[in-house]
Amino acid sequence: MRIAAIGMKGLPPRQGGIEHHCAALYPEIVGRGHSVDCFVRSSYVETPWGKRYNFQGVNIIPLPSPWAGGCDAFINSAMASALTGPRYEVVHFHALGPALFSWLPKLRAASTKVVVTCHGIDWQREKWGRFSKSIIRAGEKAAVRFADQIIVVSENLQTYFRKTYGRETVYIPNAPAKYVDSDENFSFISSLGLTPQKYVLFLGRLVPEKCPHLLIQAFRHLKPQGWKLAIAGGMSGAIAYVNQLFELAQGDPNIIFMGELQGRILAETVRGAGLFVLPSNLEGMPLSMLEAMIENVPVVASDIDPHQKLLGDRRGVLFKSGHLDDFSRALEWAIQNPDKMSEMARNAQIYAKKYHSWERIADETLHVYGQLSPTLSVTLSYN
Image 1: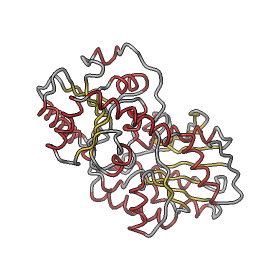
Image 2 (image 1 turned 90 degrees about the vertical axis):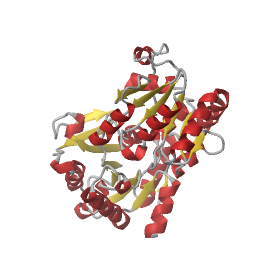
Image 3 (image 1 turned 135 degrees about the vertical axis):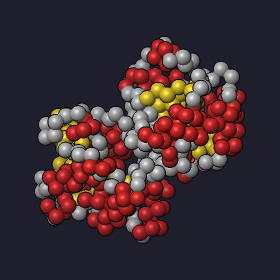
Image 4 (image 1 turned 30 degrees about the horizontal axis):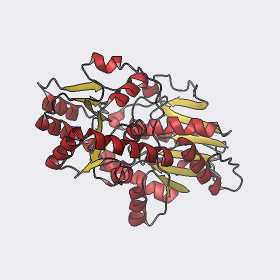
């Protein structure tokens, strides 16, 4: 089977849940004997457009991505969609914005099947302006109308499409990235003045909906003795908001901005954390949280639906979303009760390994492809 994937910035991933999702999913699918072409942004991969390269068996095709007032993703997705044709049996769009062009592959070849994965209701994200939000909502409606199948990464997204459009979707949850080996002596984090198991970690894009500002406020209010706060993640265009975070943390030597992390340094930073905290008010399926769970790191998070799904039944501590006082109490309790948090972390690790594996996700995705046409040959490996 020949598959085209559209909507990611690029591979290998540097930031972004969609990029990490595709970096884990498509090598698994290639390993089943299929061919995958991923159309990406040349500005992200720093490879001249048109110059193809290979990522773990996946064919990467960089295309131009002119900034054009922040519409680079849509321009890139439009070009990628126009390049699909009868040589692809399946064209798979990732995210609602790129799905605006989900009609184009069918125009090129009526036999082509279109799949859209919704990783979150992107038009709700605060980083987008009114125009961008309108385009993303149009992409959502296009996906409902033109996609042969829609995949969602959380049950609340499944409910959203059913209630809003009467459209049934397929729920395939995300899985965490597979971290590389890291320095057991924690040399990198030690060089930053961090002590293993004695720092709170935020890992994610520094954008308003992930609420790192709330974490800084709670941490500065508590001033937990012997603990520090490490904030890791890229700006993702929200420069004004990041400047606000710097101002909130100004003058506090116990708050460290680590920037964007990758590879061994990322693995070391997560494995050394005493607590992983995600105060988001909007998530699809948080990969960074799943990664922490797999690494046996205790988790504190807001009580939005995706977090409740992952951390329910004593797998972590939840607090009322957006509520600073409740957040502060939850964070204080977690710091003061390490034994109970360790027990929750073990429960979370068992749960994540059982229900969130890329082998299973690849098989379930291929099953979706196979259901769309009896002529598609799909080999499943997960039992």
